[in-house]
Length: 142
Length: 165
Image (cartoon, rainbow over all chains, first blue to last red; front, side):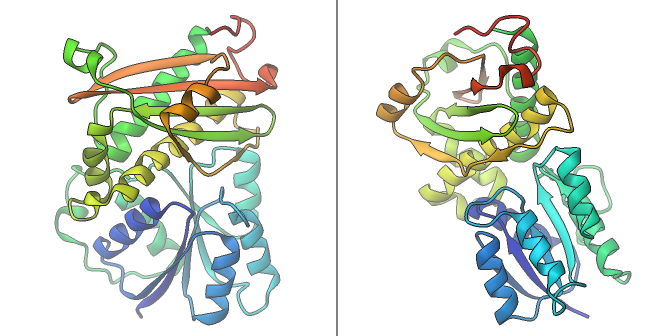
């Protein structure tokens, strides 16, 4: 199975870094979509079939926590695999996000952490790792 | 200025540059670094138990290297992306600093990073910072300043050791 992925982050740089990591990860990708806030993200979810959502928390217009709540309230998307990729350090907020069924990756993150989290939440096991990506400790921390 | 807050700001800034942009900051500037202008400035306003602003300044000559290390050489040529890269650095510094200073239970909201012109910077940074750090890196400098406008009690080190410019 190849995944349709949606990356929601208000930083174009962070979206580019996440997309770059996704492409290097060995995770089978069918398509990658991007949105700059939760509202745009919900529109993308209406327009496209998405298997995996990578979501920031602090964003203008609609933040990640509100977007995640709306996703869980909608029967069409309530089972969507979601990974929060954020600097969020509040245990209170992280617990609320985890209670909504999201996995958490803290910025800055090594690519291996994002890849391993994707594999865990999607259940993919037959990934061909990208070159030295998984073989050495000389990792690129994002 | 609080030694505790200075230490936390130093830690958050150095680790963010190291992990996000693979740049190792030095607490002592060389003569060349000390003369480099801090002419690229972004701010992140935060709200919650305390309200304030994190300002991150860098020598503009460093921006291509920061962007290249984050995005790869090809995309790093675009000036808007270079600015966005510094903004993301400020966002991560702020996001990592606040839990260190306010505890893991505190919930903050961070505004989107804002690019500032020099004129804006003079006006908006007329407030007294509670912590300020400066580093040398490659051929330039990086500086971070924390301003707290409300809720000093919520942040460790901003009250007991005094909050002064």
